[in-house]
Image (cartoon, rainbow over all chains, first blue to last red; front, side, top):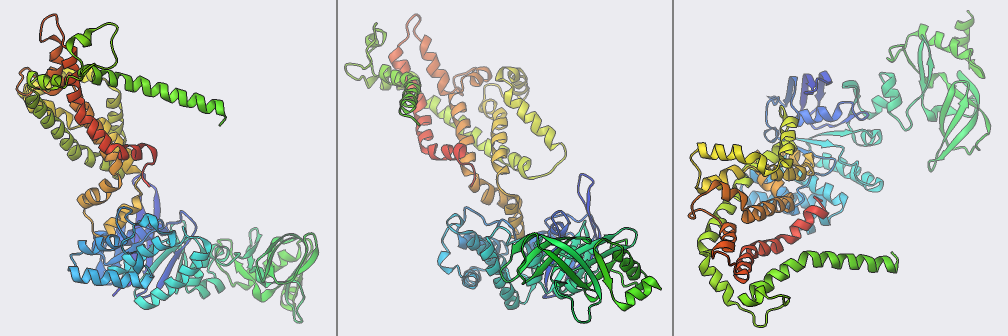
Amino acid sequence: MSSIRLEKVTKTYSNGKTVIENLELEIKERSFTVLLGPSGCGKTTALRMIAGLEEVSAGQIYIGDRNVTKMEPGDRGISMVFQNYAIYPHMTVRKNIEFGLKNMKIVKEEIAKRVIQVVNMVGLKDYLNAKPSTLSGGQRQRIALSRAMSKKPQVFLMDEPLSNLDAKLRNQMRGELIDLHRELKSTFVFVTHDQIEAMTMATNIVIFNNGSIMQQGTPKEVYENPANLFVATFIGDPGMNIVELPKIGTIGYRAHKVKLKRAFDFHGVSASGMVITKEMLGMDHLYRIATGLGTVLMKCEEELNIGEQVTLYISEKDMYYFDVNEQRSRDIMLIDTAFHRLSLMEGVTVTGDHVIGNVHG
Amino acid sequence: MSYAAKVLRILLLITLVLVFVFPFVWMLSTSLKTYLESIKFPPDILPKVPQFVNYYKTYVRIHFLHYAMNSVIVTFSIVLGQLLVCIPAAYAFAKKKFRFAGLFFAIILIDLVLPAQVTFVPIYVLVSDFGWLDTYWAMIIPFIYSSFAIFFMTQAFKQIPDELLDAARMDKATELQIIVQLMLPIAKPFVLTAMLFTCISKWNDYFWPLILTNSESVRTLPMTVKGMISDTPGLTHWNELMAGNMMLIIPILVLYIAANRFIKNAFVYGIK
């Protein structure tokens, strides 16, 4: 059993600052769970509490059926990979891997067998006797990975393990981690602030902000159905465009749902504006366009020039509504008032029977 | 750098070398002179015939083996004691959170700037109350604590990333393993440097043995060498005195040359 359960976990530092309060979290067995959030949101603290490197101020942590709240890190049956690799710099690759195994009192023959096995998995078998200082960043992180694997843990914890690697290597390692997760059939808990990492690797994403969980779900779920404004603007590249409507709520829509042409059966909002910046993304372009709705991010294949006048069409069905508490809302009343407010904005036109009927009726 | 600046720099370095090397050369040369050559004015730089016999005479005269043995016992006990006391202390200051850590460290820093003359009365009283006067204990126990060693090694240990200790904890390492198998090997240049400083200062120490001992049975090399100045009233055998000094510093010199690489590492590169 390698599920992880946090029950009413609170973390208060000795200076009196509470970073996590009454956290309830369940991480499924064999899942690749990513804890995602901006820096300082408590995701790393949560991970370190699971590892046992940080004391739990209140609450309980279970791994499988075992209550590990008071257990030493080495006794929890877990391995951890760190952001700065945390390889012992004075030991060879072999010694790095052996160190933990010897402490686990594993017999010599078995240690030797496991060392060979894990270095083969990460492709470092020619470097067994090399010192870490002679290896590249990617190779060092592979040592850390193989060291973690050699203990055959039920749970792998990873604290931003890719953020010190260059972009190309990071992409490659993402793929390798996905493969590894499939091969090892154990639970991966991965902390990152990079939503692309989260979206590409996770089977389950837990989004943190200010010490609490904003939403939990598959990458598809959190992208297509954000539960609140924070998730809507945090997930996606870029996050949702938003229009704040004081005392009513907020409307959000994705940058690639902003169209330049009016669809045949268009119902929604159109706004005229001017292109102010342009980023070339390869196949797509990302434009910032100044309109009556505010600055709109638009992702599309069309070529536009800076300064060009455009009319943008955002379909009603691509819009998300959030109430004044920033929670997702499907309340008809709220939507109607929001559209009415939109129609009063300069250079913005609202089209659609349902909406207009309500506004004028 | 311009040509003139280069020349100026080399001249400055040569001057510095001369300032530091000359006394040493003078000591070596005097130690090989006859008595008459050593008091001759104006002096010769080099003796006509090197008098190696000076070393033998001094060796016998100052009971070299007896005092050298005492010096070795005292110095090495202090170094060993400092390793046992100062390394755990430095580890705690660098890597552990505990109550009043800041205050204790401040006290250590203050002790760093206090001259020995301030602490010698309290230490004398303490040692005397323990009944340790005129024993090895008097010259060892008060000095196994060193503010400098703790301060220096704390700074070194602080450079070692916390993640490494976390990784060791995940690897089921005990605190002792973390200190002995991680902190020490990684901070080796710093630990060796601190211990070498202790070695040099305790080997050459004249002040504390003078205060804390009365009899020749436990006294150390610097005291017997110093004693040569006045062993014959009105007459100092400078040549033999310099031979004695050479015999005093050679072990330290050898030690320094052996550890030179680490000292340079500690001061120039830090922990990679």
